Image (cartoon, rainbow, N blue to C red):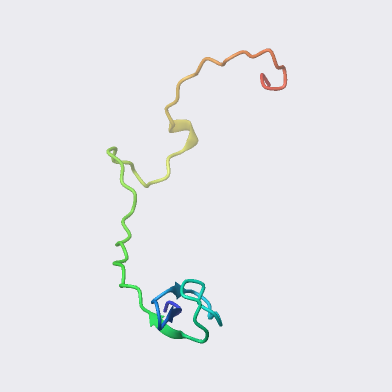
Length: 84
């Protein structure tokens, strides 16, 4: 459950602040702030959907010897450490 939030409003001019103030910075009146509870509209929580791909994949394990792969060309760089 979400924490309720409150704001303070000046009774003289309607200035809003998240914390209580003794003097209103807008109209200069003293002790005119009253606390009001602010309720946010309940935002609809999106329904969780698993990521899908256009390719249908098998969820069954496959032996390593049956995996199809192709050899890729490697990029040669001037840095020997990157070429390892």
